[in-house]
Image (cartoon, rainbow, N blue to C red; front, side, top):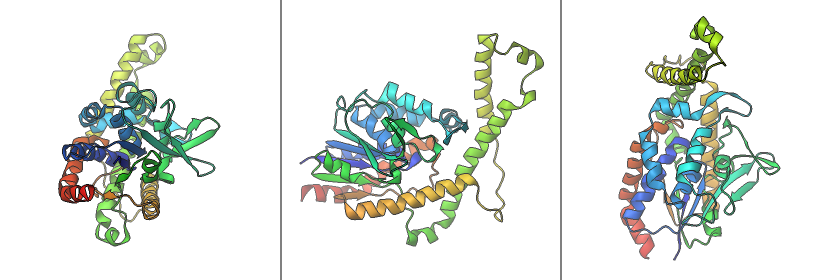
Length: 333
C-alpha cells in the first residue's frame, strides 16, 4: 500500500508540516508520495529531495527582522513583496533540480491567473514552479510560466488530495492548516483572528517604516551622497546600514489600532484570502476526502510569522501525538 501526504497552504503556518512529517515517520508511517500547495509545496519539495532537516534548521534560525529582509517588501508591480531570496534559498540548498531526481514522487499545484485552472507540476525541471505555487495574490507577484501567469495554488486547490491519488497513492493523509475558519468556531475565536490580522498589519507597517528610512533624504550625509555609485565599499556599507535599520525597526512597539477605524488593506486582503481558502478547502475535501485528515489548531499564528518555526514544528509533533492511536488504527484496518 502506497501512502501519500497532501500538504496544504497556510503561509507561515506551513512550518507545522515539518513537525507533522517528522512525527509521522517516528510513528512508523512510511510516506511514499507527496503533494503540496503553496507553503506545502515549499516544504514538500525539501522533504521529497531528502533535505527536510536542513530546511528545519534554517527555518528555526530565522528572527522576525530576518523574515522582513528575506521577504523583499517594496514597491513592485503585481505584489507587495518578491520573496525571491526565500525561493533562491530553497533552490540552492533544499531542493534538487528536477521532479524526477526527487527521492519520492512529488507534485505541486498553482493557479492560472486568467483561466482559473489548476496547473500541476510533477515532472521536468523544478524551475520556478514552487514560487508559482506560493504566489499569494497581492502579496507576491504572479510568476510567468510559458504563456501564462500563475498565482498561489490555494486559490483552487489548497489541500491537493487529488494529486496524491494521481501519483498512485492508495491511502492519503491530508494536512489542513486553516481549519479555524469555520462558522461555529469563528464566533468563539473572533478575538484571536482579529489579533492575527493585526499582526499581519503590523508586519507591513514595520516594512513601510523601514522603506521610509531607506529613502529619507537626510538618511545619508552629503559626503555619502556624493560618493554613491563610485565605491563598492559604500555599497557594502549601505547593505550593513539596511540590516541595522531593519533590526532597529523591529525593536519598536507598534502603535495600537483605533478600533473605530476600519481594518487596514493587508488585514482585509489576508483575512479574505483565508476565508476563501477555507471554503474552497471544505468543498474540495468533501468531493475527494482523504483517508486521514489532520487539522492542527493554529488560531494564534499570523500569516507572516515565519520566525515561529520552532514553535510550529512542535505544534505539528503534538498534533500527531494526539492522533497517534487513530492513525495506527486506520492504517492497520
